[in-house]
Image (cartoon, rainbow, N blue to C red; front, side, top):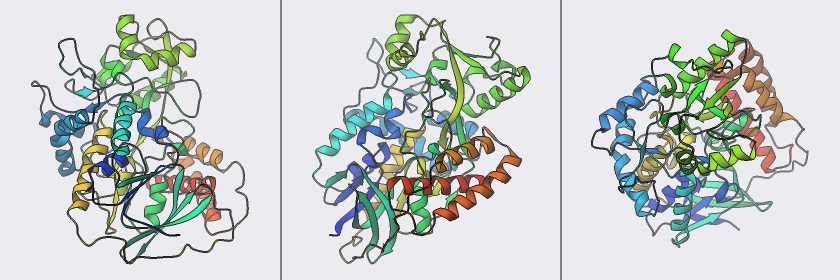
Amino acid sequence: MQECFDTVIIGAGIAGLYTALNLDPAMRVLVLAKGSLERSSSVRAQGGIAAAIDSADSEDAHLNDSLIAGGFKNNTEALKILVSEAPRTVQNLMDYGVQFDRRADGSLDLSLEGGHSHPRVLHCRDATGREIIHRLMEAVSLNRNITVWEDAMAVGIRQILGGFGLEVLREGARVPVAAGSCVLATGGVGRVYEYTSNSASATGDGLLLAGQLGARIRHMGWMQFHPTAFADHQRECFLLSETMRGDGAHILNAEGREFLGGYDPRGDLAPRDVICRAMRAESRRLGDDRFFLDFSAVPAKFAEERYPNISAKLRAEGFSLTEDKIPIYPCQHYLMGGIDTALNGETNVRGLFAVGECAHTGIHGSSRLAGNSMLEDLVFAKQIAEELNGRTGFSAKGGSFGLPGRTGTEALPAGLRTELRAIMQRAYFIEPDPAAVVSGIERVREIRSMLDGSRFALTRQYVETKALANAAYLILKEVL
C-alpha cells in the first residue's frame, strides 16, 4: 500500500534530523535512515562546530579563513549565510540541550584548528557529533508529525503528479512512498575508497537518486583527505582529531622530526589539503611513508579529560595518548562537490533539495575548513525548512504511482566493491595519478554498465554497489 507524506527526508544524520525539526509541525514528514540512527557519519564527527562568538573574533575572519582553505573557489554568498548564522545556530543547539565544553569560569571552551586564525570551534570533548545527534534524536521523538523508518533505503525515485514517487526497500519489501517534496541528506562517498573516515552508509546513494531525476552534480573531483587517521590499516579509519594539533600535537616524519614548517609557515596548523600534500612530498623525499602524531608536550591529565574516546581507542590498540608517537596516515574524509543547490537548498528539479555532504552549496570551495561541515548541515537544513514552510499547495495528495516491475534474481558478482576501492585509491589519493585515472575510468564504465538494468536482485548491496560505481565514475570523469 502506498504511503503519503508532505516531505520525505532521505538520510538521518545531523542534516536530515535538523531539517525535520525545523519543518512546520502541520507537515507529515518521513525520515529514512538506511541503518540505525546511531550509525550515521555524523555520530563519528569529533572536532566541533566553528562560530565566531568570541569578542576577539569576527564573522569576516571566519569567512576569510574559509576562503583561504577553499582556494578562493567558494560561493561567497552561501559562505556569508554560513558564518552569519553560525552564532544563532550554536544557541539553537544549546536550546536543544547540547552540552558544549566550558572553561572553569563557565565560558565556552573554543578550540583552535588547522586553517583558523582564531580559536572558534565549539566541542563536546572528542565526540561532538554523537552529542548533537543524541539531542536531535530526543527532539524528533517528541514530534508526532515526524515518522522515522530505520533500516529503510530509498532505491528509486521519479516525479509524479504533485511531487515524487519513491521506491523504498524496508525489511526486505518494496514500499511505494509519495511525497510533495524530497530532501536528500545522504552524506558522502567515502566507501568508494580503501581507507576513509566515513561510516559504512557513505556510498553516494543521494547522487544516484539525484541523477535519476536529472539534477545537476558539480565538482566531484573536490575531494578532501584527512592527514591524521590512525594507521591501523582498517577500512573505516579512526581519526585523531584536528583539535589535537591546536592543543599542541605535532606531526613527525619517519625520522621522528617535525617537518611541516618546511612546506608551509603555518606548520601543524595548516589546512588539511596542505598537510596531506606535504606528507606525500616528505614520504617521497625520504622514501618512507611512516608518519607519527606526537602529543607528549601536553599534560596527561588534560589529554585524558579532553580526548577520552581517542585515548581509550589508542589504549585498546596498545598506545598511550601522551607517551607514544602514534602512527598516522592520510585517508579520504570529505566530498566538497555533489548535488548542486541554490541558497535555499533546492536543486534544478523543483521540490528536490539536498543538504549536508551530498550537496554542493559551494561553501567549502575546493577544500573544507575544519568545523564548517556540521555547521553547514545545520544552517542549510534550516534554509530548506524555511523554504518548504513558505510554500503552499505542494503535497502528494494528487500523486499515486505503482512500483516498476522487476524480475531480476541474479546475485551480485563478488569483489566489485573491492575492485572499485582499489581503482580509486590508485587513481586519486591526495592528488590524481593521470595514467591510473585513464585506465581506472574505463573499468568503472564497464562495471557501471553491467549494473544497469534489472538482471540483479534488488538488494541493499546491489544498490550501494551501483551508487559507488556511479560516484567513482563522476569523480574520475572530472579529474580525467
